[in-house]
Image 1 (cartoon, rainbow, N blue to C red):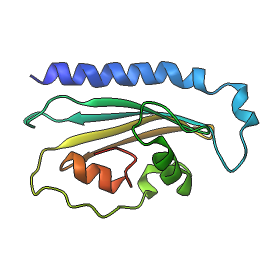
Image 2 (cartoon, rainbow, N blue to C red; image 1 turned 30 degrees about the vertical axis):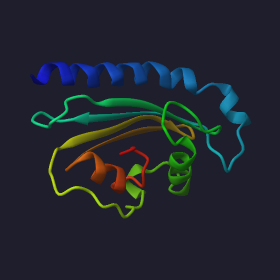
Image 3 (cartoon, rainbow, N blue to C red; image 1 turned 180 degrees about the horizontal axis):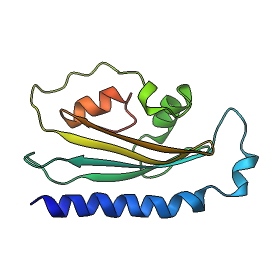
Image 4 (tube, rainbow, N blue to C red; image 1 turned 45 degrees about the vertical axis):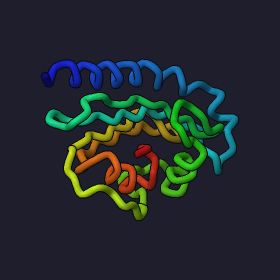
Length: 138
């Protein structure tokens, strides 16, 4: 049943697309230069054939740090270290189970006035969290 999972992702991205223009208001100009204002929607979507088809949609705000992310301060610190570039995030060491349950990780929003879109399929949720320095929670 691929359609319901795809619908949730499409809905999450549509909501994120609507929220991005609202989040980039002139108030962002008042933010300190070393603490860029950012708003991101993070989608964690297990792919077909995984034991759990339930995914997560989280928000992450940086400057000030917040949102529905379980550890926004740590996630924002990781992103600040690479100026919001998901591809540049370091991989942290993690003991992940030796199973392959593919998961798609999506980030959409803005970082310091720049649009952000990141999408990557990883072997499992633990590996995806490790590969993004914990920005995507395990």
